[in-house]
Image (cartoon, rainbow, N blue to C red; front, side, top):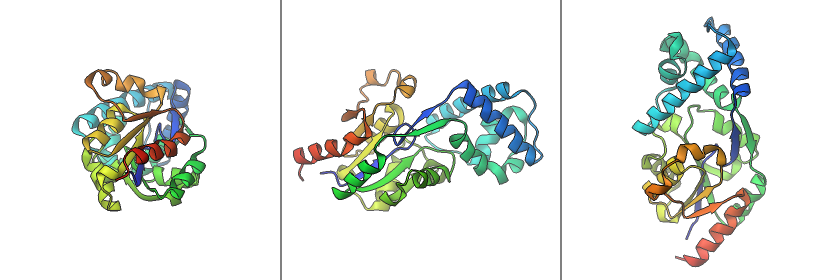
Length: 254
């Protein structure tokens, strides 16, 4: 029986759009903000945006290999802005601000329909809820939860930026389970990726893994289906979650 539901953020609670126009606009914002601190980036905004995207992909690949998250200043110095030789010391005071802006202004985040109604239904079902997110910012997720009006539903928020480990490492799931005093076999996880969410929930031996459809990340999961990485249930709409859990609990009453 499921009595705890944990959620991913990006691709799950909201969908994320990322394109060249958004990246170029963010590069301009980033360049101007760094200039406020006396840090000048050479090059046009389009080129800066392209290099930032490429360097971020390099860091994503690296972090997936080590299943960990580096400190923010190291991420910006050694990966995102490595071409500009700025130095970790100069980036340290503004690393969190840059990290927040990276996930808030570089992309277009669109909350899933019927978020509050779904969380309210889960609450009336007696579910305890929380967040597990791979994210380089420490303030982005709390901000999003407040902006969407769903912060009060969450009993725990576990971030890779604070934990130092990333999904699919089961250690980040263990942190949430320990905070909640929850049993893994009574815990469900809702996420959008095979590579991080499904694999992570399976690594952590959670009772139920629900994958929500997100076509934008299909390229990241290429080849994993052939390796047998599969969720327990697939859904298209966020509002399907209570019904899935009700059906699971009827079939697994203990």
